[in-house]
Length: 355
Ligand SMILES: Nc1ncnc2c1ncn2[C@@H]1O[C@H](COP(=O)(O)OP(=O)(O)O)[C@@H](O)[C@H]1O
Ligand SMILES: [Mg+2]
Image 1 (tube, protein in one colour):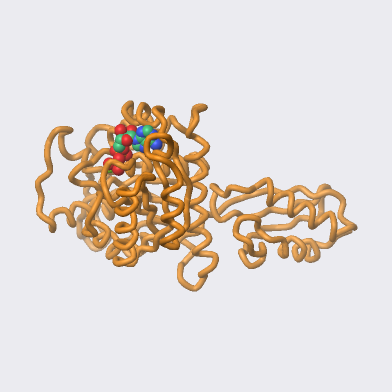
Image 2 (cartoon, rainbow, N blue to C red; image 1 turned 180 degrees about the vertical axis):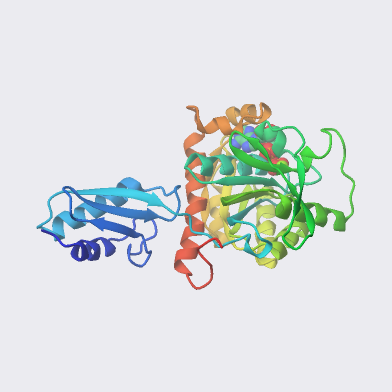
């Protein structure tokens, strides 16, 4: 009979097909149980959005059957534990990873991508929240079909201080907070910088997010103000830069990458949105290569996206058959894996547990 230690060693030497490192190095061997037939290997994935379960299962089965010849059959199971930077730890939030979604300019589909990323990660089973940081032009409530006024409750600390907690609005299972819930749809927000900073700080810190694996932040276009506020407040897992394939948009995407670098937010990669006949295709990939950031995938230009967005049904893109679902899921996986990769390759930096 195969021993636990022997099988553990064999499995630990298998290379992860996505990250290219051994399962031992990645600390992904969760448990081995040789007392049963088939013997059971449980692998702990760094995110439920892990994209290559089948390939990993096959690699483990092959290694065990080739090298533990005394073993009979092997069954590979998966569990997952989202790796995180304890992003919200500084401000008392139990949020593992805060992800900013930004672009150099408006109208490239940034809010749509932010909402899709949130629902995509949720679809894989992660706990997700969505914060609309576009205080002047909040469009998230519209895209996810959320309305109403968040309730605010007073909370007492043990030492007698009171502070306010804001209940997020839940839209298709997603916790959402936006300035759009605080002002009427056609009301304009006219604020000076310090107020903007304050509103954002409150939305981030006083919202009852609970325990989250990922908090997606839809950034306003352009200047670095909000990115700076955010980076001073929480330790971001990184930023996703959205752009369309044409040249002008790509120039702005380059600026966005430089901006995130300046405020010390790591860039997870670039997404090309609205690829297709109208704007062309492949520009963002080339730009990503030129700027030495990962390319996270492309989303075709497709009326279903505009239609679902207009109906407040972005979440539905994942529960129905359509032509864009797979590309949105792939991008969600790529973002989650980019974070996991950074953490697994740089284990000194983050705290993996939520405190
Ligand atoms: N891939 C796509 N295909 C078709 N329409 C899209 C796509 N991405 C976004 N849109 C549409 O483009 C418009 C702008 O998107 P939005 O997410 O609000 O952009 P931004 O936040 O960058 O200003 C919306 O009407 C949205 O439905
Ligand atoms: Mg927007």
